Image (cartoon, rainbow, N blue to C red; front, side, top):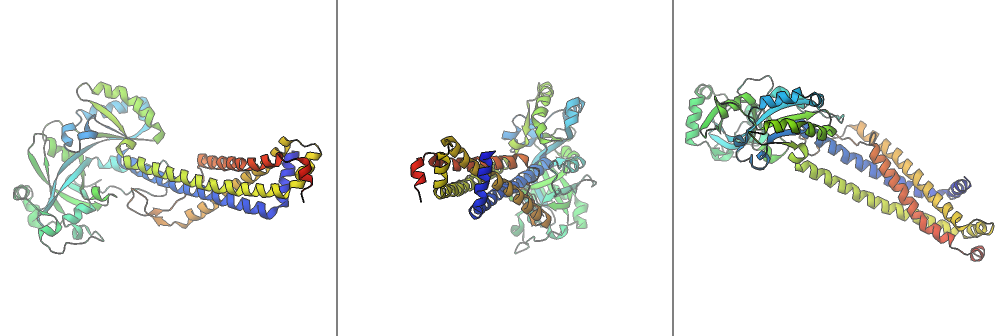
Length: 464
């Protein structure tokens, strides 16, 4: 307690220098926490959007992830209804799984018969009600919400396309899409490739009445069925949705699962390419995978099945998180170097100014270890008070920013969301940053304290 009281008194005696050091530390600590809160919010936003769209886990054919994009129907899952029933029958999985739904990916050609334009597309068939329930997942209590799928409640021939697909197929006016540039000419080469003659003939046979009626939202989609024969169906586009990634937005078509299954499999037993599982919490993924393994082993006798984690399916998410973690580490090292220099400079100055005091303390019997302890205690107090002040400052700034509702568009999101800096509740980040800066402050005070302790008593007393 005597050492503590002496250290506190010495800091108060040099208020200006101590205050300057505290301000530098607190600003550095607040900067680290604010950047950490900002990057944490980006992590949560991307995490939430990915889970809302594709769930936590996907059961697929073992080779679908590697080769399925070229021929999705060749890697379909047989008897997927029995797998869904087995998952629902497992008492532990039933507690963890909020949504279990099938999905069928397909490739094809979409064309606007009226405008004689077409383009290749990658489509997905899903259960619209299940997809909208998945989009309610918000385990991190974010202030943003995912848009509801327009497919729910529509007819069997409804479809949702990407904005890029709608632009190429010249559906902008019909769908009332804003900021959708039109081709310089109304000729087919301005908006996309002309519809091939054979596809046009199939489309005319499929939808003569729709084309004659001039339904401007009608498109024709050609897919290859499981036997290799082409099938064409007419769909009514109910909405164009921005997919967030231009490459995906230019090829995306979504439709009802039953509709695409009829096209691909006809009267054969329908299949799906994925079974999507959304869990209540992301930390339940390892436990869910272990519970799924015996179920999949049972159904893998005739087809090899595998479980893919949402991180494996979305490497961009992992890379983005790693990038922000690296930047956060760099910022921490930079701020730590500033704190190290500031505290070390303060303590070195204090040693020079208090040389006579050091000699006096040594003369009255204080050991060298006591001198070291005194100066290290002063550095510790600077670190503790500076870090705590920085935490309070970070709380205040984040609270102010969050109340301002500043709109911005984070990665993987297409609509503006309120800018959020997550500091409150991030206990691990706060404790780690605080302890890290305190340790840096202690380390920076050690060398000046060692120099002070090594002074000879007579030389210190003669110092003027």
